[in-house]
Image 1: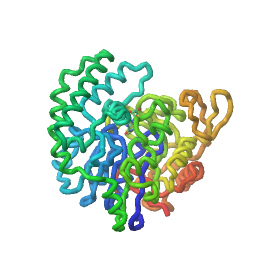
Image 2 (image 1 turned 135 degrees about the vertical axis):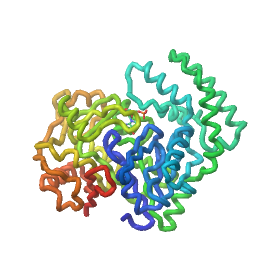
Image 3 (image 1 turned 120 degrees about the vertical axis):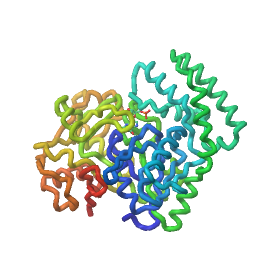
Image 4 (image 1 turned 30 degrees about the horizontal axis):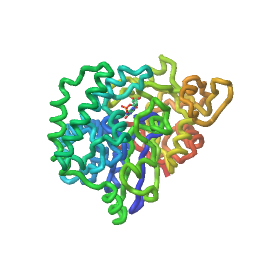
Length: 429
Ligand code: IMP
């Protein structure tokens, strides 16, 4: 259990889909507030409670624990329509949300035209990113371009409509330029989204103030990241990244607290590697193994349903993640997926296209496509781990594998997840 008055960041250390939703859900039991700090409906956090499966795109995974306060910080690009669809679906499934969900007044609004632009830009682009099509890039472009609309703007209809009219004009021109005629349903979609403005304002808050006051009062807070370190706008495989800073420092700016309020940063790593969308994956499996592990791990995108590419654990990336996030601990997920493999590989370094060897994650993404990982082979454990609840009860080879992940990453393993259920978790130390 985290100490009183503490603030922990949960961050993905690979290309997203590490199982952050499950880890946040497990840790949320012992905290008072869970807050999302960046991203939008591109995220898909899958959580299993009993026999029920929940896929959350914008509302923090802590929402499935009764009584916890769940916040969306200013760093989020909030898709109003999608947000209330998700909110209402939770209500329909009997989740009591009364007074439990708050949205930053400073959060950017992701509006229907952002989705249209995302799809049009992607289909016209020479270098495709393989986005989720949820409008994320265009919404963050508007934010950085100081053209965006924020939750607080919903309170001033006159100003709002002026700015929206300007945006629609701009967007229509851009869509025409891109050869996309998809503006037909735009007015209806905008009206639908904006009709929810009052409802959104009724749950608007100042997330920075709320979290700071909660910490002062001795409460525990989790800050939940979306996507992963390799998708970070600065530290990831640019340009094959998302349009926000996914890494831990962004948890402070994305919620409105100071960096000194953060006490711990837990990095979530899958026991192997996966990636959706375009861009290099240095430790990618050969096709047969790729299909095998995808089937074992159910590796299909929670937001788009796309098959994820799979590969061996990459400690070069894990070390990079430990450094840029300042990890104080690691949660290893999906260890059970590897139960049947007779041997395992871990990448410890890369042979670069020029023949040199590096243990550092290269800044030049294009060279990353041509690297050859240098692997260390470890014996598999070939035994089921799904029912194990204590580290000492894991097969020796599974413990050996975790030890190696810890040594190579440079951060201690604190949790090991061995299945989708809440109870399938091993606390370490
Ligand atoms: P965008 O965030 O929709 O702009 O997509 C940019 C890249 O990030 C694409 O490669 C997406 O597949 C990837 N991506 C975005 N969100 C997630 C996520 O939650 N999990 C995994 N990949 C993601």
